[in-house]
Length: 380
Image (tube, rainbow, N blue to C red; front, side, top):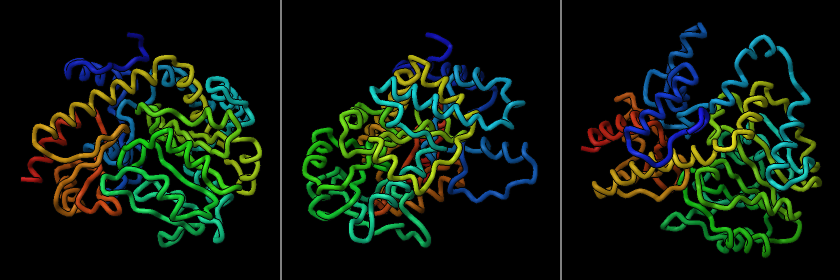
């Protein structure tokens, strides 16, 4: 195993060794976000940083391993140059990603994360006359504006009773949509939309409309990416991010891939400069030949362990292929989330149409062990 590799589906002891090694490589405990937690932040940088590791944060689908060793090495000593924009670096990253995925550089745009590209597609290709259509719950916050109102007209279709996607139902509900949005695997369910269903929607959608495929968690799953549809010139836009499998959430780097004319159509909403250190870390990550396979195996091992634990207790969950899972708690999920927070375990709460569920991100084995103990206590 190279320095950049993480452990596969091995024993818990092997997983623990991998976590320790990864933590040592970045020189600190894995940093977690504070979303959903009310914290009075101190007025000093070190005090703020301390609040990232003062609890178990498995609430925002972050990667507990952080950047890979190659990215950490690339970032080492970069501090004196952080006053530089490095504007040309994004073009280099676009070219590398395009080359690795059978695309042309002009078919890739790098952004500070994938959030704004999602929003730009909605603003560009949907309207009051031709709405954006999607299932809920899903990752729709990029389409939301003031008072949780969508920035353009939206047709939101509740997921089926088993929370799977039915693209025929989506098309029937919005036969005139300008954008059909699919998060694959879906957040928060973690369930995958079959490639055959995506191709059916592409073949049967109205002329002039586009498919927007959010692949934030594609690297954890067995699903086929839709980047090949972009290469074929289809009416498809695909977003990916370096925040999840690559562990660069705090650095902010993502991209959107599509035909050049579709990307050009979004020009009214601009492209902000991606932070130079993020580009450097993303480039190093793409050049690491084993990063994705190692992290997929690591995530699967932690996920399988949690699912086996839930099975042993007859607890219902959705068979996620992401880095998180929805667990049925049979009571208001907000109450369970609040009770766990008192135990210093931060998870994601319920979602629309899933009031008695909670979402749990996959952390390190130690973090998941802490979650299990607190979860049993709260549900007792």
